[in-house]
Length: 168
Image (cartoon, rainbow, N blue to C red; front, side):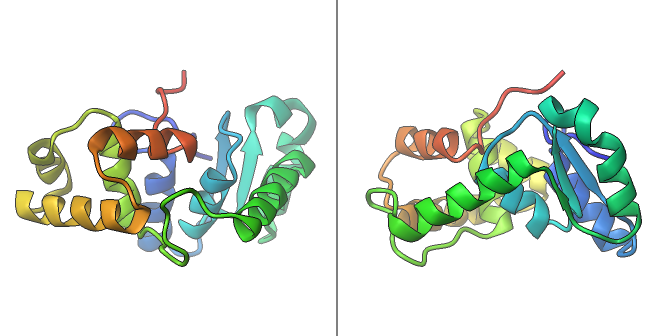
């Protein structure tokens, strides 16, 4: 069980690393984030379930049992969030966002770090890549999303649940 808002690495990255290291491990995300984008990121990273802290008392036992038995688990509330996000995405794109422009997991990680106030140099050190590589990612991200400044990129991150305070 992982929380999305954790120090150093977020829970989605932890889930991805756990699933890469031990593919048979089942990961359940427990969080306060009610964002279809966050749910999709968690499931794309290999999580088997997504449980909101607000649903904890009603669904924890059921979620753990389902995930342990190899099933996927989303509460009705999370399913509704995902469905709403799917229908919204299908019917409209964000202004300036190119149709079909999907960000990669690495680009999402870089967006999150930029939104968290990290510089290109700090991101390069954290990810073990060259500063020039971070700059290349940043320019591709901005091109894909149709944003022209760091401020616009941070606004995008906030709208899509990529910029968040640490959970306690």
